[in-house]
Image 1 (tube, one colour):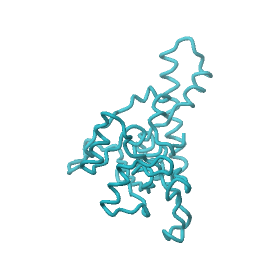
Image 2 (cartoon, rainbow, N blue to C red):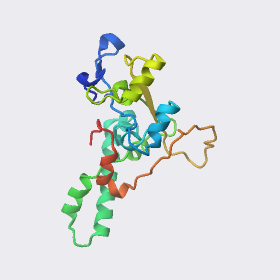
Image 3 (cartoon, rainbow, N blue to C red):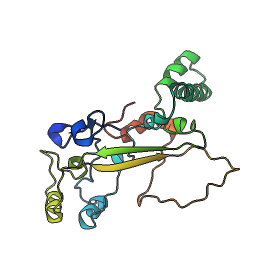
Image 4 (cartoon, helix red, strand yellow):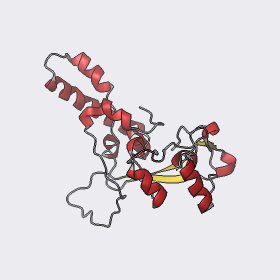
Length: 213
């Protein structure tokens, strides 16, 4: 998936000549922890060289619509239609003074969560999305905003910023109770904040900078 990294701030874009892909790829922006007093994520980044995504970078996905890549147009339209219809019903139930037309307008403005697309996958499907992250943002080395502590750490490690970091997002369909979903799963070493989907407008603040709504 492409992002919004700027060429003047880091790697920015990988050309098709560099990657062998059909077209250029604009790298995604996920920033490293800020150098603030009491920020234990920053301390871990420097001392333990462990990156824990937080805030707007906690969700690697640019937006819920990323998860629709495996669906055809009819499936996408159906998922969005059902979501809007559900939201209209909720709005009408919660606000007896609103009419159906205004409820529809309000529902259409809601952020569409990734689950509405993922739940349209059949049980033999899954989604694996690769994100190429601009290292200048991850390591807080954007010109004019260079973190000298991290800069020193990179020099000690002999680490260059000429290649993107790779992030992955996986999507699984609903699994029938008749099937055995047993397996071993690995979760990142950070706490996930589950957003209330009824607060979609507020949740926009937590989306990465390259999110498309």
